[in-house]
Image 1 (spheres, rainbow, N blue to C red):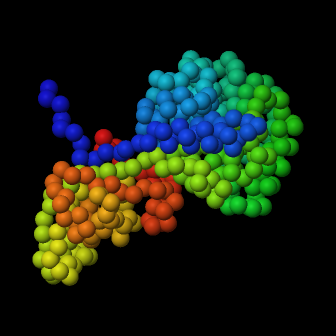
Image 2 (image 1 turned 45 degrees about the horizontal axis):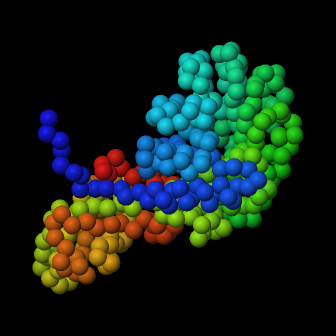
Image 3 (image 1 turned 90 degrees about the vertical axis):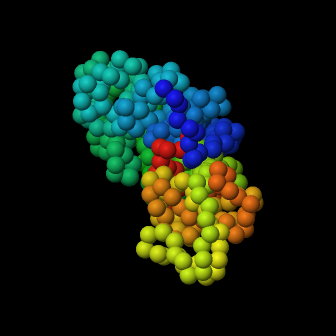
Length: 345
């Protein structure tokens, strides 16, 4: 079969920046070590592209959310390096964890019993210190089902670490310290990306950065330490002229005030570039190329006035510095990464 032509979309990854970000976060995690959250296909940037970089940079502990994320991770990692955050809610999932050798994160008394009934072994335990998502409540920790567990890492998760000085973050730290004194465990882990930036007292033995690995800056103390990793780019699939008074795209939301040269790039909201990007600009040849009109599913019209020599087949990039993109679109930095579509080459 004839292979398809190259895509007119690409997601350029700066693997050097990815490795740098892990090393920077690892250094900030002292006296502990940094792991790596690789759930959601490494926050949308591609597990097969990112995990080898993180592993070779020095990461040893990796976190996924769903059981279906285990097999892709096993292509690059030893099973004991992989933790499944959602834990087993059926005997089949507990058996799968034992068969593969990955570490389940136990989040409830039900999961604790399922794990023990399956044969048990090393696991991680999530304790809720206030975020009220997954995790055992402190009053449940005296249950006999917890006493039977072989706890490798005792885990909790911060709710407001991206708000410097949050009283809730301090309360969660105190609550987690109390839990650590109560339960036998080999390691303790509290801090996410923003938690790492909150101070050395949050590091414990293991941190779990996610967003900051991939270029996000969820806390001011990380600014200057984190480098941009992802850069979406699209090819011009058409170049055309507009006459003064002509409109562009659905609902005719842009009207040309003069004759102008425009280009159509093969990128749209199906690729995660949602309509909240309206008013943004691509870049090529060092020039800003403003978006015109409404963003379509597969196309965006851009003003080529500043780069008149661009033609069909040339590439333009969408600046994707996450803090700035978040401020422009109103989307969180997490959403900007994880909504990127699957058509990028």
